[in-house]
Length: 367
View (cartoon, rainbow, N blue to C red):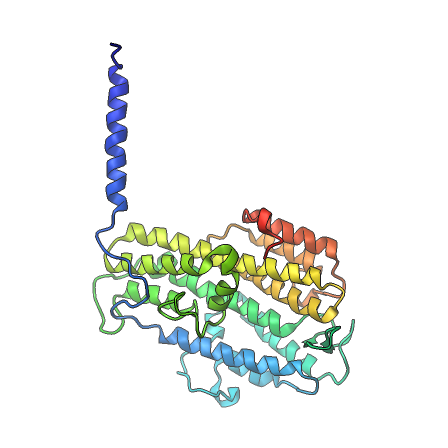
């Protein structure tokens, strides 16, 4: 009988015990729950900001009806939670606002966009190339306020603010080292440790119930778009699982698994933005001859692509984001964009490039 060389036997032993060690490491000694019902959880600040955002969105939407004029000062007051001018329907803590949680270098950009929306709403004529105003879809069923550049500012603001505020805070602030490498020993009643609390605040920006996706009622912003993209991406369970895993790991002092969960949560959240941008690019191309539908869909696509910048470990670069925006609207600067000058060929190139960056090329037309 042939004998195996000693070196081969030693290698086999090392592989066996190495695999056993890996298996042991992968077996958690704690349970990851199926809903976000941990002890000492509080993210009331995030809940308030999502409610403020909902009120801002609702007020912006009133401009879709001809003759409705928006107040620029009220819009900016809602963004900054100046309660004396915001005319809120609910009551919010004075310390809570959207503006100071927006990526700092982009805050002035949103003030400018809100002003542009208000100016466009003053128009008393129908929208056209070079003329702000409400435009109507060819079937007469949809009305959208657009600027003289064809941008649906309400959609740009909503989707871009979802990125520069909510997405940025979750993936770029609360799941970043500065907020994660903190005390995880001292438990504050109703809030948990500092690390647990920071993770909970990231979860709060997702905009879903604690037992999502079993309960899909009341979804807002990213939670809503996760649900809309779920059929293709499976995003609901994947992102929720990552957020549950990370919180359970923190509570059990398992920082290795916490870091795995951070990477998973960021990647899944990023794909929701990508899938949503692909969806609206497809919709814009399909309805290209209808300026109202084209403007509305492409403005949403622009907002989601712009949002990709705010994940610190994103697959795409900021330069590539700018190139995509240039293909769609002939500029990566909101103030210089023009959707009247868009063309289907460039939209298709943008759609295909975005899909390829995320290995979604075979599914690009399915969104």
